[in-house]
Image 1 (cartoon, rainbow, N blue to C red):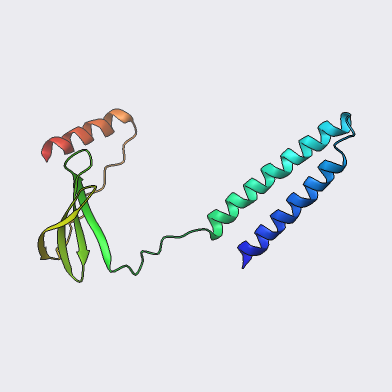
Image 2: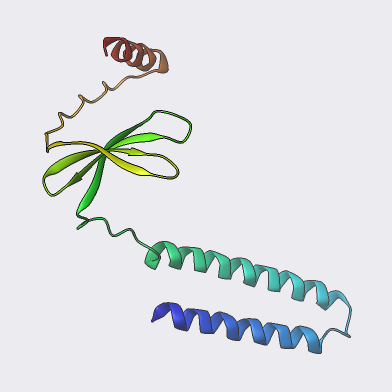
Length: 138
């Protein structure tokens, strides 16, 4: 409902601006620059308002009650992936290519152990050392 009235308001503003621009098209002068500047500011303001409204009320992803959830995945080629999909209390290992999706295996749902958080470091060298040690341990 808000979107329809907002779009109607934008169209009305555009029509009014277009009519006033055609009426004053013959008059050239210093007021013309001011009018162009104000028009530019109005358009930029409308773009900012539209962006804010879309962010506030825009498209949302409704995955909260989804019956299928991607648990993890790995890329095995330029356009090929292997995914683990959870549905109905079980995991399905799926191979995904640009043209096909194949079920490779099924297994009961498992608990994933969370990784320990990285220690709080004061500088980049400590963080890099920790990351390299963590990578070499795997």
